[in-house]
Image (cartoon, rainbow, N blue to C red; front, side, top):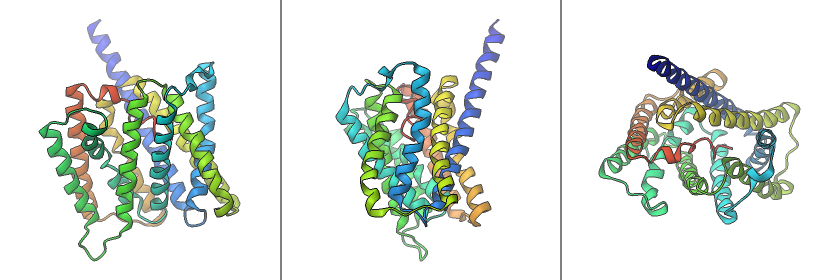
Length: 307
């Protein structure tokens, strides 16, 4: 019986890992769609349709729940702050996806766990020990390998990616707080509603009528992002965050493959070196948080904000 239980546990974890890998592929397809449409459609318009069409999967979740009670916002102003940080973060990422190699943007976004760890003592009241501080410092050395601020080919837009990642870390911290009182569905729903309302106000000033293929990309990136969100949520039903965290980094492999196949982008060797340092730092932080019992409380840290 014990052996059967062990096999069942391994099988459940395997499902979670497979779902996490599938979600990273879907998010990579979404990011590629953003990159493809970015030069012809303003970022505000892309962000508007991204969240508008992503509401469809959320509506499916609400329908499955059978009650609107899952949408109750118990901390309205925290939802507003989360939405503002999310709009800035996702909008900046979208702007950078259209103008930088996919792998570069994805690699720098791996600084998110470093920002979350560094900000936790002040914004969450959670102490950070010397080992995790050391991992943060080492991780940012990896960023220097990728960005190479003193090199001739330095692109200032890479600093915008860092800014987008900083705001994404603020989103995650805000979500960690909201998870204490609100459902994940409510957190996602109110972010998208506020985002659609805010970016909708900008549409009359930036509107560009998309071509048919651009319309397909707009619909697709919203649906791919929304479905990927559901897949991530399902993954966490089968395995803990400590098990799934390493497979989240598969996104750089998908991004590099799509960037090469579609745009002929070849990542530099320094990007892989810097990404390796960042991934190692992020995994060590995840390991320490798992040992300290912090990661379980934040097990949906990636699942909830992506929409």
